Image (tube, rainbow, N blue to C red; front, side, top):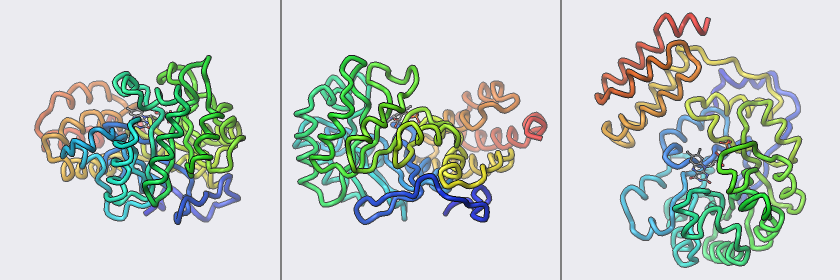
Length: 346
Ligand SMILES: Cc1cc2nc3c(=O)[nH]c(=O)nc-3n(C[C@H](O)[C@H](O)[C@H](O)COP(=O)(O)O)c2cc1C
C-alpha cells in the first residue's frame, strides 16, 4: 500500500511518465528499487514498497551459487507475500548454470528474471560475469538467448554503458538485448572502469533508448525528485531506478514518485515518522533473519537512517558497539525521541 500521507492524489497533474507493460504487468509507477547486494533483502524491499515503487528486484544471485543450493542463496531470493511485480536477478556466463538459475527463479515465484551484466566487482568479472560480459557481445547474445528460450516469463537485463570509456558499447548491447528477446533494459550510466566514481552519464542512457523500442530504465545518481526529472529529460527513459539514495531514506522513493506523477513533493518525515519506519524495519529484520544476524544488519541500516540528524555521529558510535537486540531497539528509540533530534527537526 502506498503511503497516503506522503502522496496526495488531490494535487495530481499530468504525469511525466505513465508506466509501461512488461508481460502481463503494467509497471506503474515506473519507479524501480535498485538491486543492492547485502541491502535489498526482503525486509528492505517490504519497507520500500510503501513509498511508491512499481517494481522491486532482489539482490544479485550468482548462478553457481544456485547450483550449490545453499540456504543463504534461497533466502536471498525469498519473495514477500504479495510482492509483485518482482524480479529475481541472476548473474553468470555459463549458459547451463544461468538457465538453471533462471528456471529456479521462476519456481521461486518471480514475475521476471533480470540478468546482471553490470556488476563491477573483481571476483565476479574474473569469471566473465557481471560487467565483464559487456566485452564479449557474442557471449551476451548467447546467454540472453538461452535464458529467453528457457523461461516463459519476461527476461530483463541490467547493464553499464561499457567496460571503459574507450570501449563503450551501450547501443550495441541494447540492440543485441532487444533482438534476442529482452523485454526491459536497465542502464546504469557508468562504465565498469568508473566503478561508482564520477557521475552517471544520462546521455549514454539516452543513446541506448534511441536504438530500441523496449522500455529503458535509467539508473545512476538519482537522489530526489528533481534529479529524477533531469535524468528523464536527458535520456528520455521510461522509468527510473534508485539505489544508494534509498539507504536509510525510503522517502526518496516518494519524492521520485511524486515528481514523475506531477504531484506535490512530500514533506520531510518527522523524527517520530522516521522512528516508526526504523522500528518496523528492525522488526522485519529480526523476524526474517533472526536477531543475531538482524543485529549486525541493523548497524548499517539504522546508522543510515540517522544521516544528517543532530548528534548522529555519537549515536552511531554507541549503536555500533551494541550486540543485544533489545538494547539496540531501546537506544535507537531514545535517540529518535531525544531533544537534540527533535530540536533539529523543528
Ligand atoms: C552496495 C551495493 C550493492 C549493489 N548490488 C547490486 C546487485 O546485486 N545487482 C545490480 O544489478 N546492481 C547492484 N548495485 C548497483 C545498483 O543497482 C545501481 O546500479 C548503482 O548503485 C547506481 O545507482 P544509484 O546511483 O541510484 O545508487 C549495487 C550497488 C551498491 C552500492
